[in-house]
Image 1: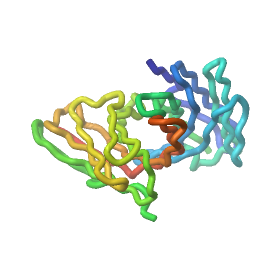
Image 2: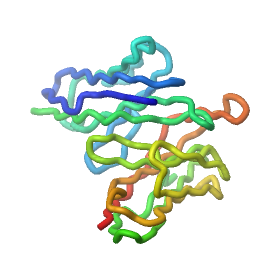
Image 3: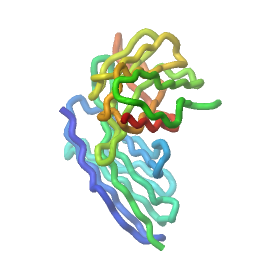
Image 4: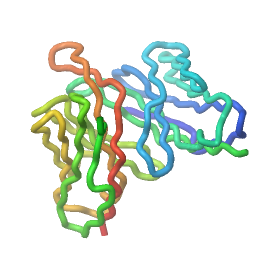
Length: 112
Length: 120
């Protein structure tokens, strides 16, 4: 089976740095996605890791260690608009190829 | 491009009623999927499709049917609504890459705005 774990909630201050962790157990791992979801809205893509290491995109970075089943999303220079849920999703092999399994999400609150 | 569209945005059903949630995309994506999102449980895959005429079950398929007659459309049918199906439903689409015969890899998914369904 597939299992993904994330902290339920986190709080940070505007301008700070926050790291959101994701651990997973899955068979047939292909890659790991991070999505952002504001309340009442659809998820939107943030980053994608296939190989071990760090992927940087502006204020957002994502790290993957396949041997440890571990990823994190790093958000720098936090802004109020970063208050949202952050979803970790693992892709794995299924009947026709690849499917997504989502973690429960981490609700981040950015305080002034 | 409109991207991924879903209708309706809100729906209230009575137990036992049936209905179809519509999903369409204009990006010529082969891969489409349906998720439900419940508090504290994240997104769970209901059904998916890797192309017209090809569908498969996800994690929670019971009580739902799908079909894929065209690349653009992927409707989700609730056969006999139950209160346990009260949820927010998201449709998503992406390009898929044929890695070897019969097997595909899905690219970044684009989500529709969601349908909020209440079953009384």
